[in-house]
Amino acid sequence: MAIPFGVRLLGLAGAVCLSACNHGTTPSGLVDVRADRQIVGASAYPVAVDPNHVGNYHSNEKSGGGYFYDEVLEYRVWIETGATQINNGNDYFVAFAQYETADRFSKRTSDAEPPLVLVRQLEWIDEPERGHFIPKKEERIAEWQVGWLRGHKRTPNSIEEFMKHPREEGPQ
Image 1 (cartoon, rainbow, N blue to C red):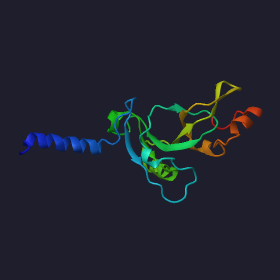
Image 2 (cartoon, one colour; image 1 turned 90 degrees about the vertical axis):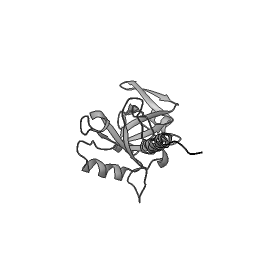
Image 3 (cartoon, rainbow, N blue to C red; image 1 turned 90 degrees about the horizontal axis):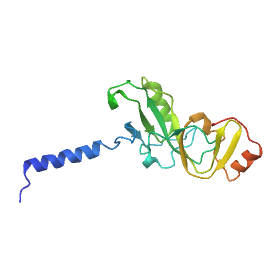
Image 4 (cartoon, helix red, strand yellow; image 1 turned 135 degrees about the horizontal axis):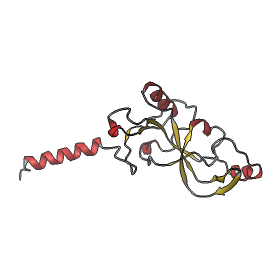
């Protein structure tokens, strides 16, 4: 039995859309336009814990905080509002598995901000008011400045040591 031309055309259009719509729209309406999951050579910063998942995290995560991180999820380069016709002129980001690739992209793309890093925190420090620190044991995902990664990878004793000598520095 032959499949009618209209049904074949509709099926082909659906397949093309599924393959091209890899990035989709996030709950906040922002579009992740591209995800670069490659890791090439050594890196100055940790690479994404799961490169295959880069580009699939929500765009509306918390910003900053926590003092310690457990995993790097991806690096993001945000493109400012109105920079292109992509995403109807709204801000969007391109996700990367490795810092160096994100940094190169940021430097050569007009209206791009410097890379940020998306981190997962399993234990972290809440600071609801200045100088008041509360240790937390729950998963939290946050966007950080890349420089905050240095010296802030959580170890088994990080939170305990921090609470003995709290300080207001680094990721806040």
